[in-house]
Image 1 (tube, rainbow, N blue to C red):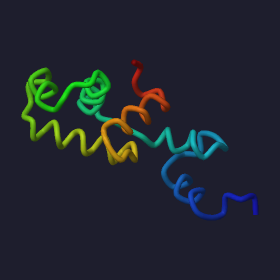
Image 2: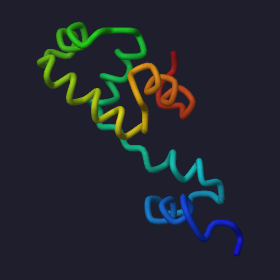
Image 3: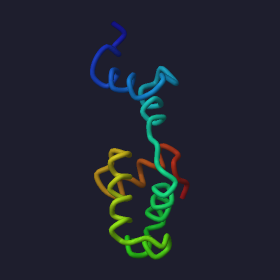
Length: 95
């Protein structure tokens, strides 16, 4: 009836509590990065490669790759650059 009875409207309705009538705001509310993912994202935004991130956080490169993959999925990003741009637009990181 009001244009929200199909497609993304239904997906947004079950992902959030309806914080606003704006579908984008509801989608943003659904993004939850873990504290470690937030640290990794901040280092990604600084341009750090996986080895540097691993050394800085005292974790393995494999674990960094795992966190980067999770970040990409959660942000719906195609690659690291897209993840940073998306995170900046959504106010998840400041550079």
